[in-house]
Image 1 (cartoon, rainbow, N blue to C red):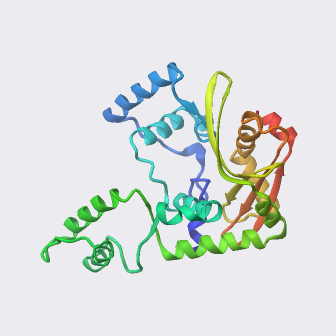
Image 2: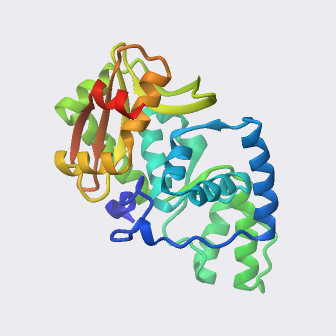
Image 3: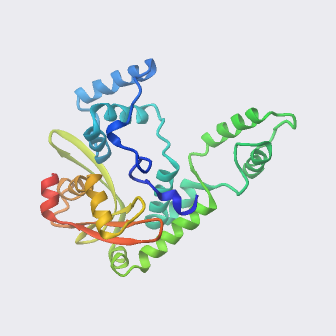
Length: 277
């Protein structure tokens, strides 16, 4: 996948796709039952809100329903681009956790043929596979085995690209200074606001700054990054992480990167944060 792996890592839409015309299917019986449970939790205010949840709701109430159902029914494994974004965050901010959270499958492995399946079966050391086993039987065996790993699957190309982005981040004069000042990474916050409990996690903080990393679609140049930040409502996120999480007068910065290794640091000023809040 290489550089193209990070396209839409946070946007979630294919290039050119228009959110206004996205068609969401009706709920199945299983989903309706699950939604009844979630709706009760919402009415009793037993759930916590987050940036992802209010962003989904801002598209439409039904987008919010779909988001909540994906989490409840454990269907949200993430797109390859989102998995790559998680890999980059992990390698950059908590590198000691990479081996515990991700596994690199070998080249040539896959689910499309006996040969590709055999590469993965050998890699994982799966035994008891009959020489006469059909492709579908091998696939089912591998899917079952993978589900026990509790790790996300990536390629060596993904690892190389994530490392290249991390290195570029630190070599950039402005971004490198911010990263080297961090005193904490992957900071979890929880706080009450507007009658709800809120939760979130940002990539890092120093004594005076809150930092969040963003992999941008196509171009992380200053103007393109600013446009996408407004479109994707990242000021809402900054407001939650600073004003909501009681981070005092800390300044909020997005550090934006793209597949061509472009880097831009953008300060979301206090006025915009207060407006978003």
